[in-house]
Length: 303
Image 1 (cartoon, rainbow, N blue to C red):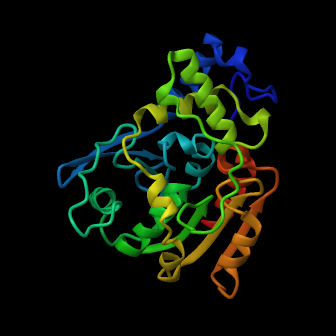
Image 2 (cartoon, one colour):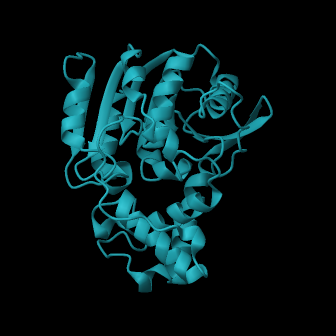
Image 3 (tube, rainbow, N blue to C red):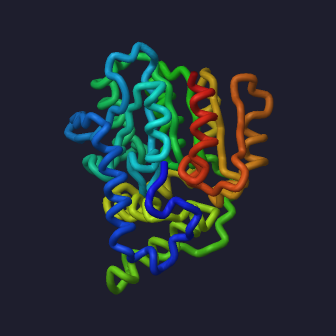
């Protein structure tokens, strides 16, 4: 999906503050958003914003896409049009992110994710029915949430996890993140956000374009849920062992949140219904950085 800076040019500090590039990125996001139907569903007092893409009367199982931490539905911006040409898509802003409400704090004895997971599962049930078969994909923190949702809800036919959190194995972070909230002004803030985008999300400098930055900037400012602690606590493997459907486990070759090749080998070994893929040259935000390849994999897997 082209935009003003998606032509191999690196988003350097000069381009970062180019109002025209910024405006083009916002127009691209608005165009994609205009293709969706918004559904605000309140479950136990928590409003969850869902976006539906594709035909409402599609008889095939809907495909639910969950974004990552410090993210939003826009984490899937380069995947929406190819996927919704084949399937009806449902994309939430998960509770505590972007356009959705903040979930309540967990009560004593409740896991930190549980209130948000309840609102997510309950609002989805209102939209598609509690026993309707679905397909499910999750990115990063959303991969861990997807694994928990599959266990909690059931009726998940196939599940794809991209750069999933919760795996509990080694991470390969070598560059220190910057706390952008401590920036002295907007210039410093944007510089810190750009640094973090490079350090965590994307491997190829040419992939860091104006759209990637705007998505990251918007999402970080709208995030109210602390996902990192949940992802680092582990629990993914236990959830996957409880899942009986077909499973695709996908990481970028250079994903700093995991050692991708041995992790994929570990999670797929001895499981006939699991398949793994490592996308060459990609970092953590694999479905953005290598959208064409990932879209082809997802369309095949969910066919």
